[in-house]
Length: 66
Length: 265
Length: 147
Image (cartoon, rainbow over all chains, first blue to last red):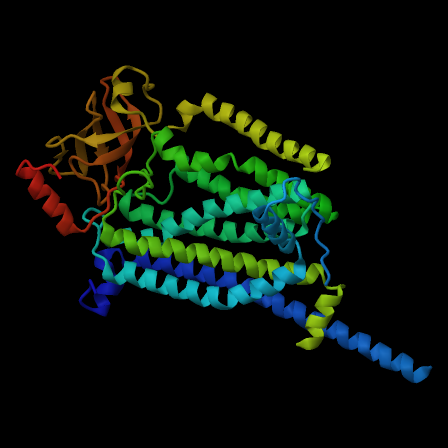
């Protein structure tokens, strides 16, 4: 470890705000980059499951009525 | 088995390697195969990429010595350089996928091109923002219209342009074709970005990592940087595959394999 | 390869080649304007215009930095080892500004050939190393040993 204390890590000899802002923005963007497709996949899978259920409901209905 | 990908004529010179290559290429064109294999790859690649990122960042932030001139502000290099390198590399992937989609009308190449655009845009954005934040304490300015920085901004607009162009068309076949042409035209920008600091007088310094000759960055600082570059490349691959999986499932929603997949889950 | 695909391949190649040629020519025509700054040799030879906003970049000459006692005015010389340009600037200099280091000053050239700067940016090089390594290099250089 190069730094002596947590305070020194945060301050980085006055460059702390720059360094931490850069890392913070990067992690935020990277997290969005990975969460966005995960959220879309979840939504799409829910939608497709709904479609399958509806189709099965139609099938059983048509069996009952015939 | 259902293989809706394009059919490839057989090579005139039958060799085992060529045959294996065509089989692989053919498989790449198959949505169910690509969906399954990318799911299996993601399961180990994503944790590995995140681990490499955390280790690389902590190494660079906490365990390396500060730079003799810039002090601690140089630690931004561990995200700035990987983001910029992968943003450039990602453009090649997008343009090559666009070329394959234009020539062979391969649907999966088309999906790969469209999946690469938002990932590349995000990485270019990271490179620009971290560069700006780094510029303030070292150069004394947030922004300067220097050849390197301006050509990186053009790269961001190219990625955003591909995304916007696809949305602008109702006919998605024509949209992909237009996007592929834009991506191909934009490849001109990549060597300009690479060489901008050598061709013109710019504020941005030349590259520190050199493939030929010695790098001008101390080995103790180079190793965490290389680890971060590997981590960013792996994250690019993960985000690319994750985006592709959503589009594959969406476009193939009427097919039997997607129905079976949904029913099984 | 299938003739249709071969034709498409040529279309793709010609898109890349022609756009490269077009953009290459534009960049070549604009090459002077893409430079962020003038090196001192071009200022000395009269290539840089007088009394228009320009940037001059180079190394700060050792021992040339003179600070005023009562204001933030600083004067220094910028060199590319072929010519030197005097620069006058009032304001706060970036942290990395130092003698023997790179700098880009923007402002206007006056009739005497002095750059009246309104902004001074530090230009650093591509060398990164820990302070101890830099010190060791300096010591060995002082002893006349080339690394």
